[in-house]
Length: 121
Image 1: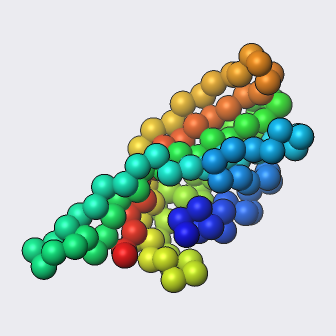
Image 2 (image 1 turned 90 degrees about the vertical axis):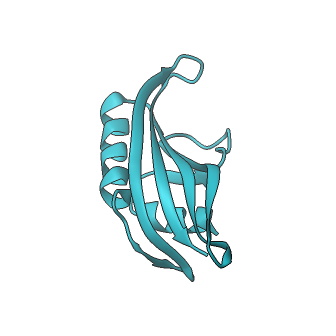
Image 3 (image 1 turned 180 degrees about the horizontal axis):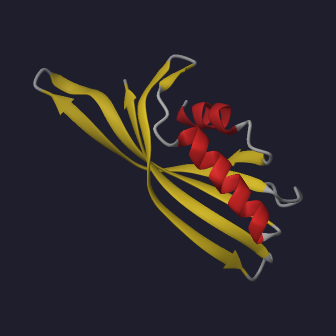
């Protein structure tokens, strides 16, 4: 459900968006997103009513300028986002880290952004 929500938020960025991995035949630019972890927050009444997800968004392109433009657009949409998508209540999305890279094997530039996503369950 979170993958569909992130896709829905990022669909305005000019790139193909994939959960987890990209199809090898598909030429860049790409956005690859994946959940890295989950931290539940149990209440005094028992089970968790909200969770914090660790999430990563990777932007991949043939030029440094293109990947920077994509990452800036993605961050502008995601950082501090709040809303309801297909019944999933997203209380807040906050960027926690960003790193740039160049992959010699694929000859592509990358920017990886890490986020904390607070959701109600």
